[in-house]
Length: 455
Ligand SMILES: *Cc1c(COP(=O)(O)O)cnc(C)c1O
Image (cartoon, rainbow, N blue to C red; front, side, top):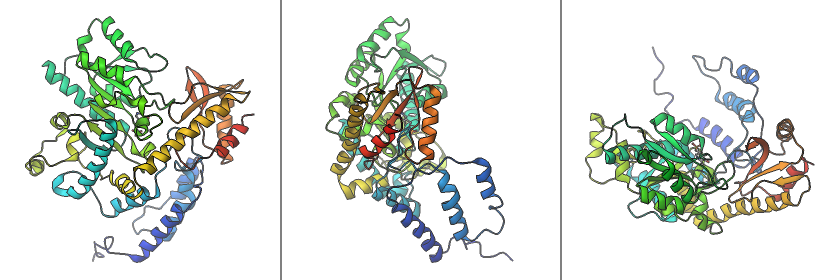
């Protein structure tokens, strides 16, 4: 005799109360504690024997998660998390993420999920409007900037192959500056294109430098696209998008803009002019899980001419034919290399609908202001040295006299003391310190507290 095979699928109010109770508590942390790096041996011991045949008491498993596992995760949504690019979801977005999970909301095809897709597309439209993309623009939400860059550049490659009448044997190249994100370099390896490395001017890719690189190149006809970065991850520097767009037009290049981190600045009036030229992009990526306060994992991928993406990414399988017989209804799965996808744009949609766009503008501007105030304080501090005027919310700086090891020791101690998570970074081969601001709850007092530890 088998026990009822659907016993895991029955409503279980006790379990609901247990997990909702935990979530309620987690949502009320104010501030969210940073927590700590993990110890492999300790974690393995805590987990030993857990996945057995008969299961465990849910309260015990949740307690194990709360007391052991969650404490060994540095909280990206802590206002003291100032490394890499933090993640600071709004409460509304976090809560709606649970709804997406609870309802098993997918967003593959119009046939299956029209309601979810209509809402996701409303958000994509808002972003496209901010970028100045035409009414024809559209796309989908993917898991991150890396997936977005890959999906877009495959379309660039295959569109060029068709235009040039060449096959996979032809050597194709994409112009980039050295500061381009590592995921773009990875993409080149995956899709078999080579970089045309354009020397940066003041750490930016500029139109004139791109034009000169093409003029000096013996085979400019093999260059089929250019990637501009709207906010480098390390320094928050925005390329000369208008200049790049002009050269792209003259040379028939696909113009991709990687705004995974900085694209959110389109919503910030104080810096909007730095994005001039983005309206000419053939494809554009921005990560709402970075600076648009959505939970992981959420990237918006937009194409100027979505039909070009559809021609490349639509999967051909007899069991999918039913999806593609309904004329122009929107199938998000056709705009990236995925098939099954979570309706991951909905948490952002809900939060935008609840709070309004101005609340986003205010929160983004707060990060920009904090970066400017921090830069000023660093400039005014004798033993510190600012490495660049912040354009976005990243600030790189030097502690005069410190070695590589000094930065690493300092960073570890800051985390151990739960004062901040601030990891060192590289600047022209030198180890330096860097803040990435994003959480609107990060205060100047926290910055001062951290800088005081460098005295
Ligand atoms: C973060 C980032 C990426 C990668 O995005 P993921 O969401 O981590 O995949 C790509 N480009 C830039 C400029 C980024 O900042």
